Length: 231
Image 1 (cartoon, rainbow, N blue to C red):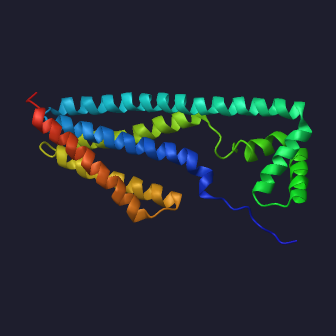
Image 2: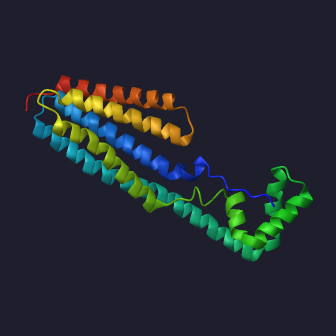
Image 3: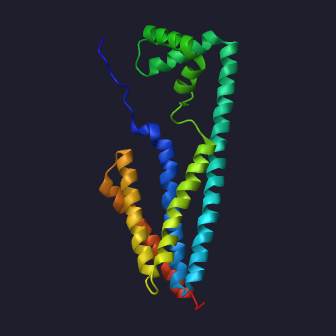
């Protein structure tokens, strides 16, 4: 018999990747913008670091709570659908088999073959077959609230820490330049990494992230400079 190896596709990591990349980008960009805004408003080093630290803590908790609630709602909906499917399988297994076969017919199988496939899959794992092919619920994309919350909070904190560290290490008079430069460089790396991992164009990913990052930081710094006072 020919030997083969099961291929691993990028979709298997799309869930955690999405949460991690969004969290890191959000943490880095929002905190860098805040730090630049306070610095542009002539804030002292202490004020800049205090604002950045507060952004790290508050943002991480906000990301964790928001992601947990959002993904938990999805998990609740999936559980309700699976409970209903279990009840339908107990009440009318033959009818559920016909329903599954009809799905395969719509996808291109001959009716006889579709019926055979449905019977064999239901004999192996009836609920799993209906979850995957009728409800669109699979192990790869199943909602995991705790994992999403921890991933989002951790990645946000990691990203948000970068501009705070840059501001902490920046010599007097160079805070804005060092924070902006290091943040844009980090955004470019994250954008390129996310694009490469997802199989998209790396250059396009870098340009997209850095453009919007530069715009956000520029607008925030302008607002700080316009309305700021010496503190």
